[in-house]
Length: 106
Length: 432
Image (cartoon, rainbow over all chains, first blue to last red; front, top):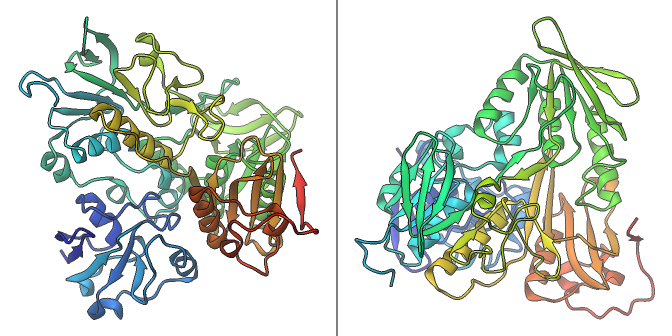
């Protein structure tokens, strides 16, 4: 199982196992990682699963599509070049070790 | 804090849906150390319902993706999940606490009781309503059955032009089936949106091949010799071929236990803004409740949404913990139909005026709702900026004047808090 390393807003570090095909958001929520709210459960409707992808992985996760891109314009925490909505990143073997910081506000 | 731990029977949460789960999670997050029992009638643990009428029907997500928490989460947080257990009676003790009887005979003791019993689909009551092929959609079992039936179907009749009906119609149409939506009123989504949104959705679905029979009731469902549905008979006497009938005519809050306890109920269990029922030691949250409207508290509203299920559960947990009420949040909702995403922020009920922003023909526009010149809600179709801007404005308590809201040359975000003086209004409508 690929692993995801998440830095919570309070500085705590979480390493969680992901199923291939599951989203980063889904994996984090199921394991009770704090800071990812994900009110809509992954429907790309609420922009409350905002994360900053680490530099090493930004090329591998792909880019936000147009709708996600618009949602990211209005997130509660500042948008950065490595901002993504974690519900839109599906885990693959290539993403093993994916590291991200959870946005301080959702 | 919660009395002697060994003595406390803790909190029994009746109903293991989104609201019940959130209540359990929020209690633990708030430092609750007594036992938490989460009892649900369904076989598995808490799961997401919204995708059932969307991605699950389309086949892009499965049961595993729907689970709200991993199994290990419950043991890690000492939350006792009691699945496949319908509670049939609740008996309060003299003083605090009481016991609940599960239909299998097991008894659960509690010190505090929380009702998150949800709702059930309203049943069709015409002759033939129990024929094979007549479906409802609420649980993952319902959705699994419907998904299997859709695979072998050709003609689908959807009764009810609400969110469930339209989402299912879109999913069936995407499979290439013949789909007819029967709506007894003159327009779609009538209870929740303004006429331009209703009209937009009718046209958008028609363009994608869905047929509509507006203003028609269903008088009977007919079947063949094997009791399988074959046709739906409408109030104008016409018949529509169907091998599946999907009934989406609203829900009814599950309030039997609340009534048994003597709690005040209207359409749902009446709670205050602390999620307290008429018996202060009993809290309730989610679809089973009605609560004071956040801005117009003299009116009771039932909010059937994930957002309310979650946020009201947080309030209920704070009440049990004796903490101050979490800040109010802006109600919001979404619906995915075909490639159209509707995002709603605020409550438009009681609007007296609306503004259409953008051209519905582009399938990307929004409608802003006003009550006595105050911005109260937005319906945004494929228009996330407008949704997010109005949600933010409502959270901050600032308006976006109706006079400027229709002008797409500037963003709504930039118009927040602007004064209402423009002499020209764009596409303003009044309540029908």
